[in-house]
Length: 253
Image 1 (cartoon, rainbow, N blue to C red):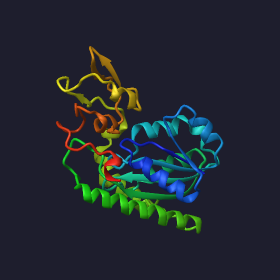
Image 2 (cartoon, helix red, strand yellow):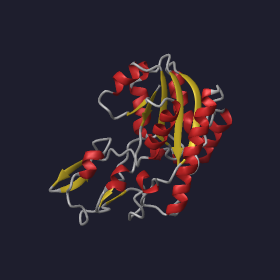
Image 3 (spheres, rainbow, N blue to C red):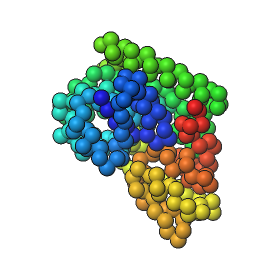
Image 4 (cartoon, rainbow, N blue to C red):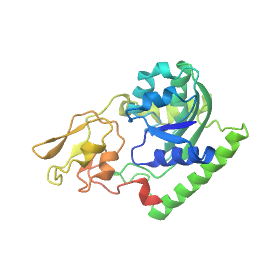
């Protein structure tokens, strides 16, 4: 077994790491951004595939990764983990339908509520103690799920037709434009930006460059909030105007 993931602020990486280490103590995890990810996929038949959910849909980068490597999923056994701040409906189903189209067998799905990653909006914001409790509850859920999976009783969160309808009409239909394409809404405050290059280093899309010692967006953002939550100057925003809380997983452990 190997854990494959995409993670913006660390929530999903934490979950897949906990899942795999509890299932097989010496199992490994790998990001879809790693240079050797194709070799890893080719040499593992059972995959735990994990990602965050945005507006009840896949992040664009995850959707493109699955489609780009469609030939690799044939015959794979995949357990899907979808992390979310509140609701997704069919968070796991969004990728399950793609995987099955390319010949994979879906062995289960798990929805996990984690601290909200949207750093520049007050919506869904919880206190530090509430977020710590949320992570603790998620950890226990993962442990229980591993036990059930080993007993051939995997959860099927988000994989049913009813879940599909809930995700479609709950959010995805109304906010489809938010995840259909990479977006150009990322904003960088030139007065705050000091040109340190941190955001450029960690962006999964290579969406940021330095120009005149200031960070500039190339309008290819996948909404992962990684740069926003790691900018030391809080100079970057996406949906809101100001950074309210940099929502990195290490804050809640």
